[in-house]
Length: 275
Ligand code: FE2
Image (tube, rainbow, N blue to C red; front, side, top):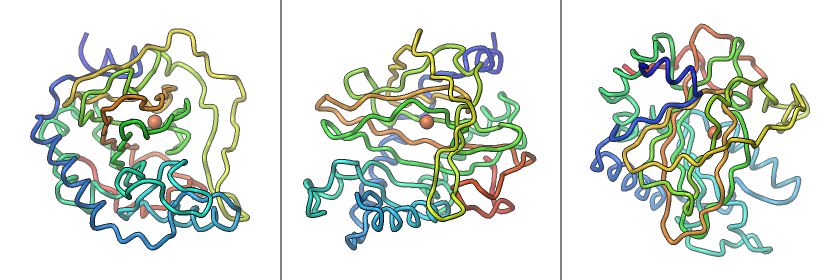
């Protein structure tokens, strides 16, 4: 079975030794540098009250072509002070790393990515977002079960994710979980902007996700996991003493319709593929 057949059958594809350890380390190093350069002005993207969540939404909605910083849910105390140092309070950086930062750009558009895109026949796919996900030791929180196509909604559906393990991902430090063939299901929701401002999870199908057959995708540093946009997946909190950094990019078909209600505001015509 070739890569495309395997991907179509399982809804995901695990490619070991896809990136060198040096390339993974370069991203980890660059992520730390960006965090150190981050001039935190007291307006984090995670707040608790309505007024504050509006600030959060704007920061979030406008992050498509920026390098923006998002905090772990429990990283602030009741006085909105960080409980830990800034770096270890961060959940992720996004969503324009692949275009803005040369190190991330090179990683996202490597020779092996160009070859893989060809093998998966993604000739019209463009990169729409990127994220450096920290999942810090003892701090990194749960990511509830979801389908990526809910967050990168197109008609017809075209979202495909590439998740790169920058460190070993194990059950203990919060690896991904998914079910082989799990992508053969309906899209449950569409995360989009509300007319009144802010965002909402619009329900398309309220059938609960089936958790039967979910397996941990434990992978070594340097592995790339390709994820079908319809594949339900999740990760558990990192309860271990080891961080689980990962980098992810998402792609969509440039010929698909990208509704204006989508949360991620982007200049669609400016999106580029793997070249
Ligand atoms: Fe996801």
